[in-house]
Image (cartoon, rainbow, N blue to C red; front, side):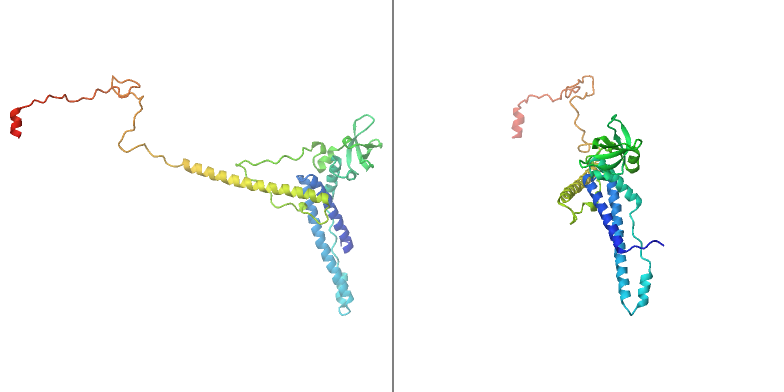
Length: 315
């Protein structure tokens, strides 16, 4: 049987998980596109919600047990409630805790978080004696924010600056890309009209402004919220643009499939020939309109002979 815990221990665990959420949230504010941080935050949200549910159930059971034990009318109920095993505490999954620790160490070594987060990290540091890199571990941080390291093979301790320390390749493979390989966040890409617009969905929970946030955190969140809303606006514009492009393509395709009328002009009337066409006949010439045709024939006019007798008869 698992060891029973009381509500006080659950509250302590809940406070620890919420503090870890705040730490990951701080990392997200500096690197909002980091998928690893987003995954860790979502996992912590689930753990916090489960712990809250378990705490509420435990407090309710404690209240019921206290009420039952104080009631003299139902001693058996009190005994049954006291004997009932309490649910065990929801513990943070080891993989999530390890990911949080690695993420904090990478952030500290890159200058994105508190230098104290790097304590315990397996790193490579540059030895001042020869300027070469050696395996070491971070054992502390001095007042100036520089790292105190101990070289693994020699046991020598030195204070090194931020640019003289880097994450080991093995630690980078276990927890993500190394700091030296970090390429930054790609610039937002506008979709072409042939691509499906990217679906952003709902705003991330870690962007919600909490009453406990300080002024600096509030300003960061407001800036990121504004950026998120701008992306949503661009997404809507892309959707409208794609719909218009699809409608135009459909119109063009329908227009191209229409049947063409056979021939031109009126039925039975020949189309006017080009002036450069060659007529039939040996006398035809190129470029001469009407070549090859003879002159139009006319009847010869005859002189009218006046006959006096014929005119008199007509009268």
